[in-house]
Length: 123
Image 1 (spheres, rainbow, N blue to C red):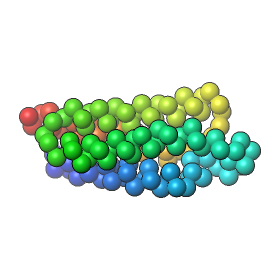
Image 2 (spheres, rainbow, N blue to C red):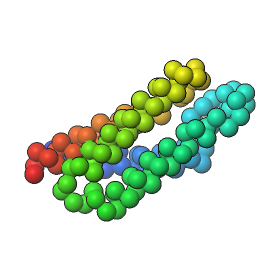
Image 3 (cartoon, one colour):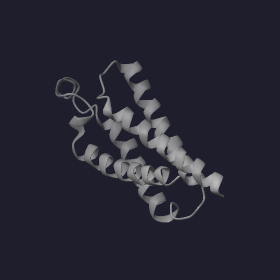
């Protein structure tokens, strides 16, 4: 169970630092050709990424130190919904999105859900 806790802390750091890197370098989401052809299509992703970062930091500061599993499960669900949103965006627009974004979101979501399960089981 200690490995789940360490993995959770790694996912929190990855989500915050990775999200900040994406906010300041949006070319990591779309290829240069997409950015040149469609302009600032990345703004569609920047608002949800900012929201996920802000919520993650807020929960990290105020709720992750408590043994309650609900905030952790909520954040994990949001990460999985964001990954599904990337897939829906691709299906609707056929604009290629770099694969690390949905994979990172799924990793963070599953890590949060595993930590929520650990907290619920341990009481």
